[in-house]
Image (cartoon, rainbow, N blue to C red; front, side, top):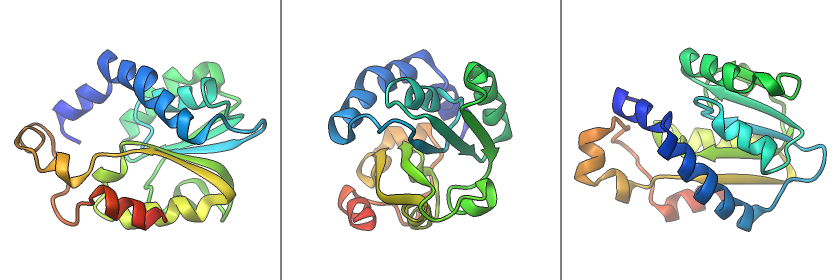
Length: 176
């Protein structure tokens, strides 16, 4: 991510959008997690999504990864009150085994708060999410599709991979 997008995702308006719009929509589709659930957030950024997973979705334990060590440091500060329930690691969503030693079926839920569109090998990230989900596990996601990424404003302000971008249909087919 470039500076503009990093500033945006760490801003109060982004947290407001996530808390007041995205979380209610995701809860309406997938509901709260069963007691004792273990959840994973890919691309955790400053840790606000992980905090919401604990508070609003009812996750008992959260593992979260991000490629950027500076974001992991921000997340550690934000999530300090939950230190016994959260594990943070620097790593890639396309190799959760290396980042978290994540076994097949080890999570009850995987959360993607708009990160997969940043990953050039987005199919690999979706496959990894599917691999680590337990049978009947839930994949909560909100994503930016090629339609939005092709808008002049997005192209001017943000730095996203330009090859092999997905439509909503492509993404849903992949997670199918």
